[in-house]
Image (cartoon, rainbow, N blue to C red; front, side, top):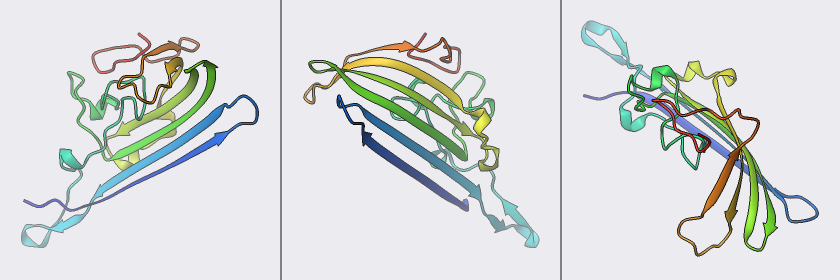
Length: 171
């Protein structure tokens, strides 16, 4: 069987070095939308597929999107099954801002705010429904290291807490 849909994913990043001690500010934004396309059905009726194939849905969570959540574990109640497993969605919004500052030798301090969510349908995207994560961490800038050791600390106790459907570096 064939499924008709239109899908778009846009992203933009900005990096700026601030005058002084080498502080770098990095910002990113990602927006993904997908909608089903009406197809001719039996007896001349139109059928619109609302749920995309799982391989075409959007997923978020993990160290490249919203860092307080495990890989692909971010979502609304409609995009996570009762056990907390991600089902993906037709809408995605992710925003990041961070400041990186040298601390001592190869150690740097990084403060960031990540916000995002995965939505069942593209029309469900609402900024008020974004999950927000804010942390301060230190890590080694060694370019050869395969695994960057890091220490993270939540700011203001506002990080999402671990539950059956989420995991956080702050718990």
